[in-house]
Image (cartoon, rainbow, N blue to C red; front, side):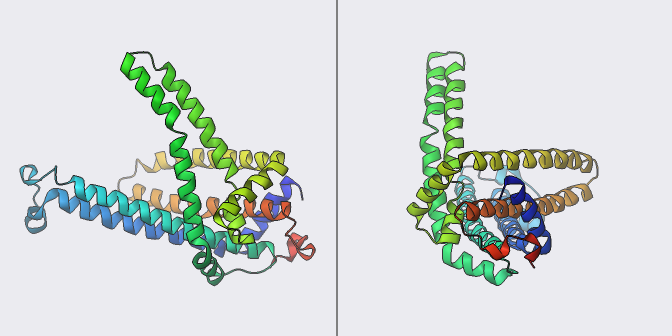
Length: 284
């Protein structure tokens, strides 16, 4: 299989199985509801009970110091919810992608079974990556502290920022196939990281090309969406609603498609694609 096959087969597989977008849609809706409810509770905490009873806003009655507690709770709730839900839905999407590649027609039942089985491992992988990224933020922090402490130009901050950026990118590339390794091959958390690094090391050229193509596609789509969003911003209220709907549609197309592409790459490089599915027309 060449790089073009990954995209052509993913496109055909996605168009024939649009239900692949359902986990991403559910993730978007659930997180939107959680965020909206949390922000509403935070707003009421800031405005006080007078707003609930009279509808009037009295800034003098608002305890902004006490607002730090509900704001912290709001941040923690959204962060934990995002971690859990994104891990669950990612496991579901990878599992459904595996079914598509195997020539099967996936449904949400397939996705939920994979979500139930693997989401805790995916959470662990995300936490490990987060810790590594925090450690690799040290160069930019040191550069900022030195520049600020000695009144220097932000030279060290820029250098530290570049070093951190390179380390972050390398980390994210090394973790590219951890989700596929866990869901497709049922590797352990540490085993998935080793497996991802091994697949990358043995196929570094193809993997880097695919990642670059994904980034370019995402940037192009984001640019077009930005222009459309700018036009919609001139339409009061309705424009904002249409923008949210359009963003949800784009997310539900782009994210699962890229996951399907990476799952194709992973399963191909691991020789896990059955010969009977070599013809993409057999995907039903």
